[in-house]
Structure formats: C-alpha cells, structure tokens
Length: 289
Image (tube, rainbow, N blue to C red; front, top):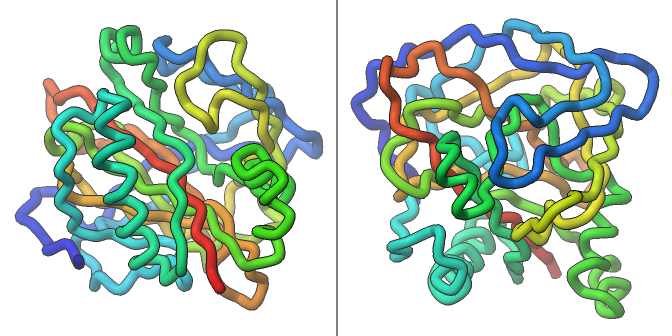
C-alpha cells in the first residue's frame, strides 16, 4: 500500500509559521465556528504565538513512517467512493474500506469507524454540507480523559470492558476531490513531542446542528506550545486515492507513539487560483488483543 513518490515541484522543505499556543499557564477554551461558516471564525481563547518551522516534503523522504514509531503513515489507498458528501455512501462503502485499511496499517485486531468530518475552503460547500473549515493550530484531538470519554460516548456499558484492552484512535485524512492545492495538513513526528509542552484545551459544545459525531459534543484536546525539536512533514498535492493516517491517542505507555500533532497551514507554493480544499477526516478506534 506504499504510495509512490510522484513528480512535484514542491521543494524538499518549506518554512511556514504555525499558530502555536503560547504557554499562558491556564486552560484555554477552543470555541469552534459553527459548521458552514468561515475559516477565520475559529478561535482559541488563549494567546497564539506563530512560530516559523521547517516542514519536510514527505514525498521526498524514505517511506518508512509508521503509526507505532512516528505516529504517521502515508499510503496509496484507492477508494470506491463516488461522492464523499453522501452519508449513505460513506456508511456503505467508505466505512468498510477504512476498517480494513486501519486494522492493517495499525496492526490491530479490530477497527471501528466512529466519525467522518468534512472540511472545505469553499463557502458554498460549507453552507450546503455543513462542512467545517481547516484548523491552523498544532494539536491532537484527545487527552487521556477525552479519549476514554469518547469510548464511553460510543460504546456505553460495553466501554468498561473495552478499556481494559489497549486501544488507539487513528485519523484518516484525504482529499474528497482532486489534488490538494491549498491548506495542506502537516503532521509532527510523535518522538519529537514533549508532553510538558502540551496544554489541555477545552473544546466547547456546538450551539447549532452538527453532523459530525465528534464535534457534536464538548471535549478536551491537547494543543502545543512551540518546541524547536518538533519534526514536521507534509505530503504535497495529495489526491483522493492517497490517505494520510496519524495517531491521535494510544493507551500504551511503553514508548510506542501515543499521538502525532497535526495542523493545517498556508502553503507558500499554493498556485494563484487554487482549487478549493475539500477533505474528509475519519476517526477510527483500533483495538488490540
């Protein structure tokens, strides 16, 4: 399933300012914009401090990244989905595809898809499909508390038994249309993340209709303050038959990657008239015997 390096003009490395959270010593509140609104409406009530960092072109690196070491995997993955905006097709076609893909890449015995979140830079798409905007802030979606809570949200009384086993939460991110020409996603090597430089962040519950299971409830996330040790990667111009997988949480504490930060960012190589960025991210529980 390894994705083959393609012909791209993107350089081996770019310099980009990422919106790190300043170490303010308090728990910030991340107030998400309602689905269907503009990018600039997403705000964290907590000081942001942009820092310029190098982001490596992952296509030009040896493709040895793995979910258990770096917390990242990049694969070729042909999908039979014709319309990612069709919820019925996601349930009938995409969810089974992801269960197989994630179990194989993560090495789990069972994978359970529990959320699909669409994102778009097109105002009309956000309005029609209640899609969300890209999030330009280095973060991971769960803390230990919120990862366990999401398990309870989804599995109810069955959660106590499942929590006795190792579990992980993996995101699968891809284009819903053609090659991504703006606002790509950067992912950070889990081995370079210092938990002491992460801050718990409260994500408020939505005030309007929300189609995403994940975003339809309050949660705690981890946002990062700047750390020069962070090692960032991106995969320019990803298309709909490629998938970027990254670890959001792992209950294992033996040195296995527990989470890889991720952040959307403004690509300095974006063309003058880019196609809208339309992506889907899916959240998947992975269970291990």
